[in-house]
Each structure stands twice: as structure tokens, then as C-alpha cells.
Length: 301
Length: 315
Image 1 (tube, rainbow over the protein chains, first blue to last red):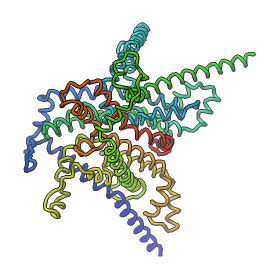
Image 2 (cartoon, helix red, strand yellow):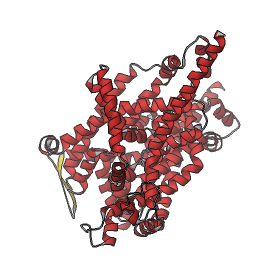
Image 3 (cartoon, one colour):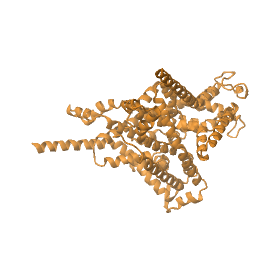
Image 4 (cartoon, rainbow over the protein chains, first blue to last red):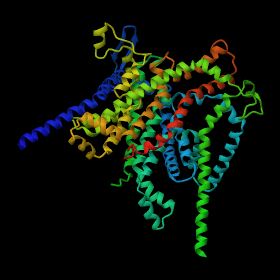
């Protein structure tokens, strides 16, 4: 009797496993056809010289020639890659810190909070794809900024603050970084919508008892932030750093270059090699940054 | 005496903090809203107002001329309809396939589950540009392992149709689909097992449990995925400009707007048309393209903010 029962249960589990496989099947098919095979053939192209003509593709294995060409011959590749990586290194900390700060602000109770929240998530909708590209070329915006004198006044303000900070003995590098951040505030705000959402969600899962207890003990809001909020959301800092890195790498100069090489010059081999080098760089950065951050992350449970 | 002074000090601190917060939030909100306000102000301006030194924000002559031009050049209503159809289609398919995959990964144990889930993570990490060319070539001569040529005699070209989007979204491999699978998986894992077991004991199968018990519980994550996928598909220029080069959708129309405008106003791209005027109509076009999203956002922003807090991405 018992063995029959056990047999039944096992078949039930087996049935469930089979069903589970069916649930994942659509994704698996797509994964194979639209991801794995393209990924492998992209790798193959990157190691070959590819010629497209009316009959189709002619692929000749040519070793690391394309990689060498991308790294040593192509005039733009190294520069764009360095540019993208540098931009990323500058932007990611700013975006993460800024979005954490805003999430804390938006979590406090005040009048018009829902309005403020909906304004701050607006960039999630607006700042993507073609709109952003066109916006950067908008002539009217540039001219109007000049006309309104915004540029001049803005520059002045930063300048004064800069000299103030330099006098206070901060290193020049830090001052430059900060004043740069101020002048690129729109970029930063517009890229941090999703990150604010994630942080906000994380902050709201922290139990209010912790804050209550700390208040009883006489902690100020500032201390409560560093001793409670910060450690509790630290896993999300990791998540957000990774998200920001991936996001910043999905559309920049580098991808434009790869696209152009592939689709207007029809040099598929070189384009694939560039794409793989790029992928390797992204992976390296992701591994390093997640290794560095995950050592500091605090897990509550 | 001392206590009241302390009280007032506390109160002062509170007031100052509110003031600082108000200033910060108002300033940053302005930074975010500035481009939109700018565009609205530009769009209702008359051509002559561009050079008027006294006009900065409020135009002297209101006109809808820019809108009429932009609508005309972009073939706006057609593009709107196309984009709406495309986004709705991919959004629905993506949500369904990602929910299925997410449930499979979260609750149904089968061999190789963790290996396959590593595959999901891989799709998130690999930049789409890496696989763009092979996918493009594959879609250009679509054969599905030689199955299609067997039936029709030759490969089909799927470019400039909606099929690339339908196929990738039905198989949960469209734009950022890995992220959606991750969201669903996290959420399904957060639903207590007891709920599911109760359904099994009452005699429901896996399919029925998923459909009747798990999905209604997962509404916050469904809303999140629907919203993100709709918005990102709407704004996407990466895949749209690759797969759909001649179809009229918002992204391609917007991208070619300056050029088309120059052609219409005068003869060809190197015409002597006023660049400011071109920019003006282009701004109107951008405004028109994001207007539907803003209208939708006004209605759903409440869910947008609330739902992500309960999706368990944070868990």
C-alpha cells in the first residue's frame, strides 16, 4: 500500500515536472532560436571573414583577424569603447546615489507626495529610444537656453561654488566631478526613474519598528538613515548598480558604431567582433563591480 | 520653560527640513518637466514668434499650424494606429509567455531548471547588439530549421512585417523579456506555497491552479510588466528601426521627420529651409509621439507606483 502511494506521488511529481517543462517551453524555443543560435553564429562571424552577396553569406574562417582589426586598425573602436566605459564609470555612482536620496525623500510624508512621485517616474516613460536621440539635436532648446541666459547664470553659480569648495581644501578631482554632475543633472534624473522605483519599493519593506526603536533611543533622522535604511537597502544597491550598468550599455556611441559597421558598411565579421569585445568589456565590468559591492552588502536574514 | 524651547527648536528643524525638501523637489521636478513645457510652448508658437525677442515662453500668436504640419508629415494617425497595434500585441504576448516561464521557473521543479534560468540571466546580460546581425539575417531568410522551405519552396522574408515582434514576444525573447521573467519568478516565489497546495488538495491541476489561483494573486506584477513592456516597445527605436524600415510606426516616423520635413518644405535634404523652423516642427512631432503615453500615464500612474512596490523585485 505504502509503495503504491509513493509510486503515485512520484508520478505526480513527474507529471508536474513535465508540465513545468511545458510552461517554460515557449521561452526555451525562443531562447534557442532567437538567442543561442544567433549568439553562436555571431561568435562564428566574428572569427571569420563574411561576405554577403545575392546567394547568401560566404563565411571563411580567419582566426582573430577581425578582433585585431577592431583593436588596432579601426580608428573609432578604441575611442568609443573607452568613452562608453568612462561615461559609465562616471554616471553609475551618481545615478545610484541620487536615486537612493530621492527615494528616501519621496518616501517621507508631505503634501503633494503623489504628485511628486508621478513627476519623478515620468522619465521612465520619456527618456528612452528615439526621443532622447532627437532631443539632443533640438536646436530650439539649445538656443532658448542661451537666450534665457540660463547657461551664463548657471555657469556662474557653479563657478562660485567651485572656488568655494577648492578654498575649503577639497581635492580638485572631487570638485570637478561634482560640478560636472550639477551640469548634467538632466541626464542623471532622466536615467534614474526605474532605480528610484526599486529603492522606494525596498525602503517600504523595512519594518517601521526599527525606526521606532531607534527614535526611542534618541537617534536622529540622519543616524537612522545610515544605521537602518542604508544597510537594509544595500542588496538593492547591488541590483541597481547592475541595472544601471546594463542600461547605460544598451544604447550609446558603441552600439551606434557596431550598428553602422554592420548595416551600412556590411562588414558583418568586424561588427560581430566589435560586439563580442564590447560584451566582454561589459561582463568584466559587471563581474568586478558586483564582486566589490557584494562584499559590503548586508543581508538581514 | 526648557521643554517648550526644545519643542520649538524641534519644530524649527522640521520646518526648515520641509522647506529644503520642497525646494529640492520643486527644482528637480522643474528639471524633468522643463523639456516638455518647452516643447508645448514651442508647438503653439507661430513661425514669426521664433525671432521675436519678447517671446520666451508665452507666444504672441497662438497657432496650431505646427501640429497640422507634423501630423501631415508623420502620417500621424496611421503611425499612431500602427504603433498602438504593435505595442499592444507584443505587450500581451510578452506578458503571457513571461508569466508562463516565470511560473515554471518559480514553482515547477524539473531537470535542468537552474541551468535554464541561468540562460534567462544571460539574456539580460548580453547586449542586444551582440546578436542583432545574426537575428537580422535569420529573419531575412526565415527558414525555421528548413521547415518553411519544405512547405513553400523558399525562405520567407519577415522583415517589414510584424512577425519578428510577434515571434520574439510569443517566445518571451523580445525587448527586455528576461527582466520580465525575472520579475514574475520573484513574485510567484513570494506567494505562499500553502495557497497552491490548498488548490491541489481541492483537486485542481497545475494549469487550473496557475490560472485561477496564481494569476489573480500576481496582478501587481502583471500590471508592472504590462506597463513597462508597453512603454518600452512604444519608445523602442533599436529593434523597430532594424526590423521595420518602411512601415509607419512612431519610432521610424519620428526618426525620419526632419528629413521628410526638409523635403516637403523645399527640395531635398540640403535645402535652405530655416533650421529653426525644422526644429520647431520636430519638437511638435516629439510632443505628438509622447502625448498618448502621457495621457495613458495620467490614468495608470497610481498603479505604476503602487504595483512595483509589491512586485517583489526587491525580495
